[in-house]
Length: 297
View 1 (spheres, rainbow, N blue to C red):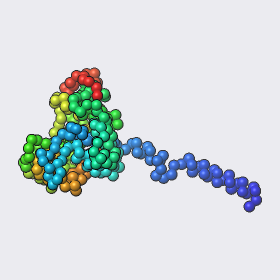
View 2 (cartoon, rainbow, N blue to C red):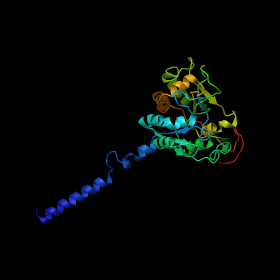
View 3 (cartoon, rainbow, N blue to C red):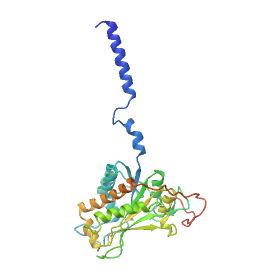
């Protein structure tokens, strides 16, 4: 090939390479970044914290004594997987510190748990977003608000003193102005797949229950989500004091199904047509759920 021809070929190749470099490859991070950031985000909060685990079964069943926080460290991953498989983003958080137990550490890493390091184990703390809201779980609600969550779901269990086998008042709590549709979707999933379908509750369904703004100050975390227009729900469907519920949940496959079912309830909500969010007009104007200012966490 003559020198002039070689020069022309080189120039054409260089131009072609430059054009290719300016265009991201199909499936590349640059191409997908806008779509990734635009996808709705779900924040899951593991209830309570190690050292203050909330509900627990009175005794071990099949060698396992279920505890509220430990259960959700182990199984929140399956809820998160369902949400992400449907194309949504999901972050799991917990108000406490990283667990000391190596097994729980492994579960936390698997689910990518973000630990919020609340300074004290107990007490109520003012919201840093809506300062007249305060509660023990406020730091998690504030995290969901600052992340711009499409919804926040607080993963809990319930429990009473001693064993029972009765039908429990299984519920999904929701914030008054924005959460009913989310709670309805979660209850529908739990009633279709789990409650009285393996987890015996004497025929009683899981029902939505509003956590009213005029309720005790412990509702502050839900109220803060309401103020920011974020649908929020607390899962209180399983009772760790109920022998039938515990007998179901100590089985690993059943526990996974329970966690996945909650994920499907969240996905059903996100796929539904939702009304415009209700926002609090002015934080400086007290409303029926304001309880004054308190210490900051």
